[in-house]
Amino acid sequence: MVKIEEIVGFLQRVLLFHGLNKRQLERLAKRFVERKYPAGKAIVTQGHGGEGFFIIVSGKAEAIRERSDGTKAVVNTFGPTDFFGELALLDEGIRTASVVTKEDTTCLALTSWDFLGTLKEDAEMAIVILQELARRFRVALDTV
Image 1 (tube, rainbow, N blue to C red):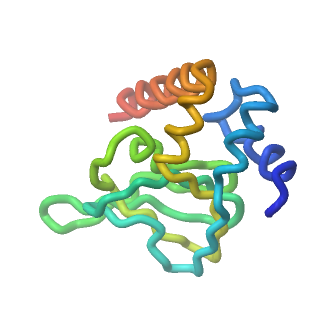
Image 2 (cartoon, rainbow, N blue to C red):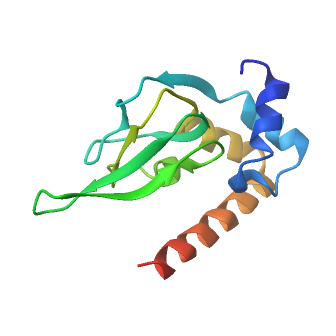
């Protein structure tokens, strides 16, 4: 997936970007980088810094949270068009969970500085994305 048109077509299927128009998606698509991970590889690691946001293009991964007593729990599973790391787009905090591939996985990755730079160019895009992030956070709180 190297052509901007292919990335735009893919981003149109990602819930976070449903409210964006084609021009906005093209602007974002230019900032994403494709990353490939073998099965069993950590994409991000709990407790480490992270400035990236990831969308699964193909493959599967699990979010695993290590509790204070050392036990681990799978807190989410990801497949194509699922995303994670959205908090890392907005702050420089540490990762709240590790995300490990269950099979060979391809992702689109976006750094926080690329994301924020894009939002500075288009305030309407910022509003649409932040509203979706707020909705997602509310859903997450309802499941706790």
